[in-house]
Length: 306
Figure 1: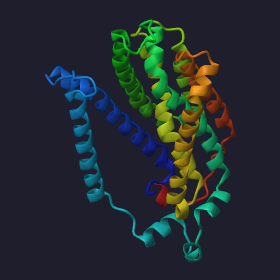
Figure 2: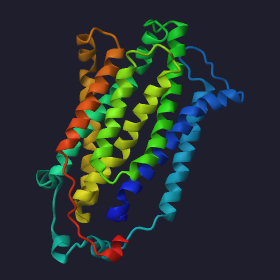
Figure 3: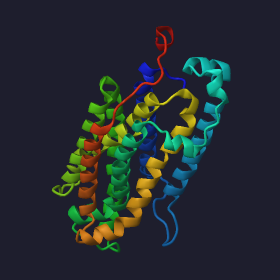
Figure 4: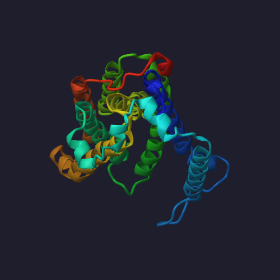
């Protein structure tokens, strides 16, 4: 809420870059700990030390980063914030509940939310069904008790690491596009190609290409929806709308999880079909981007913009 209009796209892309860089470190932590001698084996029903210590390290990093952010980030005083966003005295006195704000939300809120629905449903299916899908197509097994299935599960961690790398790299590319809708739709289509291509790939290394492309969609999902939304709402209700907008992340995943088993049965029971469906969802999301109209309610003078 302190970034000017010209820098919002860059700011959210930096945020996307940092999120994915953190994901990359997290995915590599168990492998790295195992390489330096921490046990990756455990009795049935217990968690290996390499995984346990990874969570401890993640918790420590999270706490330290929160403390650092809390101690160093300077928020605008209310008066300065109001002047920056052009909020008048009468507007400050207005009391608007969440239901009121939802009823009067800008069209952008709902159109971007529609895109979000398809995107987050797609990634919920990726997180849920990739291990079984890759075990089937690459290792030729659907038996969860076999060593091959467990090996496939370990390889999925590598693939998700590749996805994080793709996201980090694509997050650098996104700000170079002035048209947010073009890069948004393009990113989702690249991710769709990545998902659908897994149906035809039986080499575990060639799958790197698929998940690099999936990473492009993920980078866009972390940056562009919030860039477009915050450009369309005033500073007065920015925080509330961002909170409400998180519903477009949670609700799609709840719906996708509730219907996943039924859909899997209808598609014949092969988990790879769910990754193809995820790709179709991203195509639908890219089409829905065309319904988004980016608006700018606040007109700030050039001294602020610069």
